[in-house]
Structure formats: C-alpha cells, structure tokens
Length: 287
Image 1 (tube, rainbow, N blue to C red):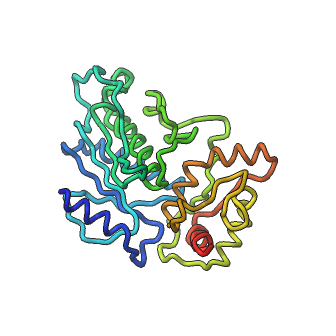
Image 2: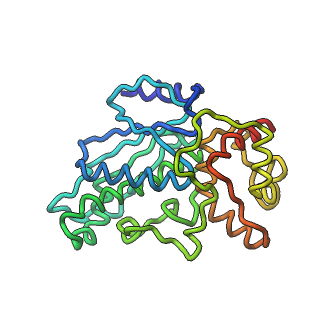
Image 3: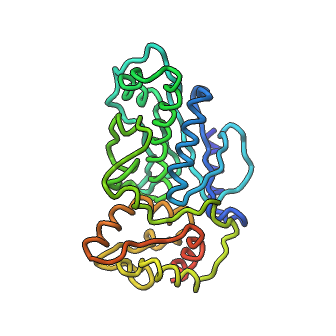
C-alpha cells in the first residue's frame, strides 16, 4: 500500500494531455461504506467543489488504477461510514478530518473519521426520519471531506470564513439541507461554473489569460502580473507554477476575503468564468 501511495505522488508531478481541470480522488475505506452514505457524500463533494470550478474522477485506491494524473488526492475513511442504531456521542470532541503536512507542505493525503462525525451529529441525526438518516449523514461526511480537499488542492493549511472551509463546523451546518454562512454567501463564488465542465484540453493562450485577468478585476489587488501588492497576495505559491486545480482551490478558499476586500476598497468584486481558468493559468505561469 505504501509503495502504491508513493507511485501516486510521483505520477502527480507528470503532466498528461486531456486532464487539465480534472483531478483524481482516490478513496480508501477501512470498512465498506453503506451505499446510501457513499452516494450522498459523493454527490455533496461533487456539488460543493463544482461550484468552485473543481471536478473529479472518483477511483478506489484498491482498484490499482494505472492512469497518470496531474492532480490527485487520496482520502482515507476510518471507522464505519454508516448510521448505526446504537451509536453514542462519547467521543464527539475528536477531529472529524485532517490533512497530512510534512515540513510545512500540505500533502495530497487526507483522512476523514466517520465514527467521530457520527458521534458529533448523532443526537440531531436521531431526530430525523429514519429513511433520511443515511443520506443526511453521508452529506455531512462529504462536507468534512470537502474541507480537507480544499486544503489539499489549495496547498495551504489556512482556513477561510465561509462555507465548509470554516475552521469549525457546527452540527446544524453539517446536517443542513443547504449551507448558509452569511448574508452574501449566495454571491460569493469567484469562479462562475458553466453547465458543463470546462474544456479538458488546456486551451487558451497567455494573451487570453491576460485579458481574463484584467477583465475579471484580479489586477486591482494582485498586481498587473499576479505579483502581489499591499491589497492582495501573489498568485503563485513560493515561486512554483500554478495549475488549474490549484488556482481554482485558492480562489475557493479566499473568495469571501476577496469580496470583503473589494467592498472595503469600493471596487467591483473579482469574477472569472470557469472556462477562462486554463488560459489564466498560462498567463500567470509565463510571468
């Protein structure tokens, strides 16, 4: 298993045509999840991440997938990902999920503790109709998973103040039909997602990316070339080239902060269409 994980990380550094904007999610369950729970968590992850311009190919780690991916995350699920009839909240104060960090660098490995999540929400979950509990629990597990995935793909351990990226998620937020984290949450998405996923060909040019960068208002805070300014950080990570998924995740984690900063500066909030991101990345990487 360790050898397979090492190979996955090595493969993640190799570019593959046709996979720009798409990342692989490798799932590893200690116990086979309840089908209804897995379906709900998968739907929640796809929904939450697509709203930030992120799309995924789901694969079981045990499947021994031989494909090469430019971006991936491996998520291990401990405990039993199912609704148990006699569950208690005896250890609800444990971490619900975490991301592995080495020498300050966020690794593409995360863990989600289904037992801890169930213990945390069991009191409220038990008040729901029995037929809906598996779906609601799976959605809660999915929201914890999204929180960790944003750490992985944005390459940062920092949190933001909105949605599932908030450092503390209440039981009511995990179980809610819809997340609602403030009066301007519905308009907070920097990346506008198209009905279909963005082109997987990595199309667009540096000049088109420059035009998108300026038209989207990014230069108001991040400088004319993404070099950073007193109003916004550099859109590069320690001098490393960006990729599609990393940029989308960075925007997702910082979108509430960017909106608030735009309000304070009395300028238009930044806005980027999903299909503009590949060319935007080319522009930022050429600098």
